[in-house]
Length: 376
Image 1 (cartoon, rainbow, N blue to C red):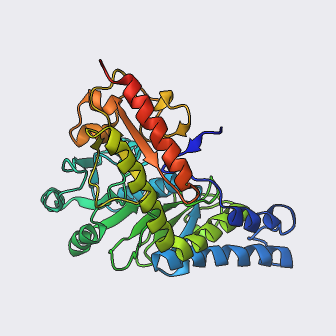
Image 2: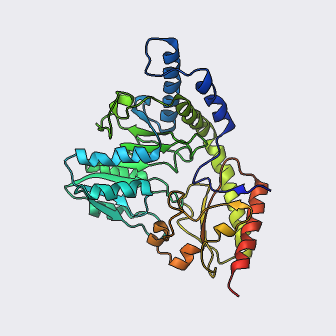
Image 3: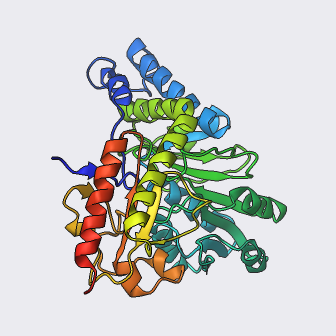
C-alpha cells in the first residue's frame, strides 16, 4: 500500500477545492492584475482582492494590510531586515526559531546587529521574564515564532506583543505553522508583522503573505515595480494567490472542526503507542501545542532516527528545511534532550485528510519498528 502521509508540518496536500478554484486562472482568466485598462486585468485584480480579504478575515485585520510574497521565508526576510532601517542595533529572537529566521539573524549580525537568542524552558515555552530582561535602549525588533515547526509548541504571543507595545518595539511573528490552525487576532495580540505560508494550510507552494500593521512603514528588500504597496515588486502570481485565498477561506470555515478532528486522531495515535511503548517521551509542552503535531523520542533505540525504517509511514526527524543535514535538531538540543534521544526522535504531523484507519495502521507500524530496534 502507499505510505501514510504524516508529515503535515512540512507541507500539506492541496485541498481539491483549492485546486478547482485555481484552475481557471491558469488557462481562462490569465490577465495581469497590473493591467488596469481592460477586463482581463480587472478580473485578475478582483480575484486577488478576494484572496486578500479571505486572509485578512482569518487574522482580523484590514485587507490593505496584507502583502503577497513567495512564502513565509520571504516574509520573514522582509520583516527582519527592517531592523536595519530603525536606527536600532539590537534584535531579540528565540534559539529554537526556524532557519528562515535564524539564518537571517546570522546575516544581520554581519551588519553589526546584536542578536539575543533566548533559550526556552524544557517544555519549549519562552520565559516572558527573559524577554523583559533582554530589552535595552537599542532593541528595535522582537521576532518570535507562534508555533514551533518541530515540537508544535505555541508561544504566549499576546503577552509578548504587550511587552513590545509597551516598549515601542516592532514585533514580528512567524505564523507559518499556526495560521489557519488556531485563532490569530493581530490587533489583540499587538503584532506588527506576521508571516504566512500557503502550503501549510492545504494551499499551493510558492505563495505566502505578510501582514504589515498599517501604522508601520516597511521598506522593500528589492525593487522593480510598485506592486503590493511598493513592498514586494513583481507581477503577481494570480493562480497561487487565488489558491492561498481559497485555502484561507476553507480554514476559516473548518478551523474548529479540523482542530477537534485532528486532535482526536493525535490522541488516538499517542494512546496506541503508549500502550505498547510506555516509556515514549513527548518532546515539548503537550497542552500548549498545535493539534496535529507530535514529537516523540524512544529511549533505548540504537543509532539514528527510526524514520527511514518506517515502511508505511511518511514522517520526519525534524524540520524539512534541515532534514538532510546530519546535525542534531537545534530545537531538541535547546529544550535539553541528549543526542541519543534526539537521534531516536520522530516528528509526526497529522492533517485534515488523514483517517482513523490510517492512524491505526501508522501506530502499528511505528510500534513494530521501534520494538525491532530496541537493544536486547
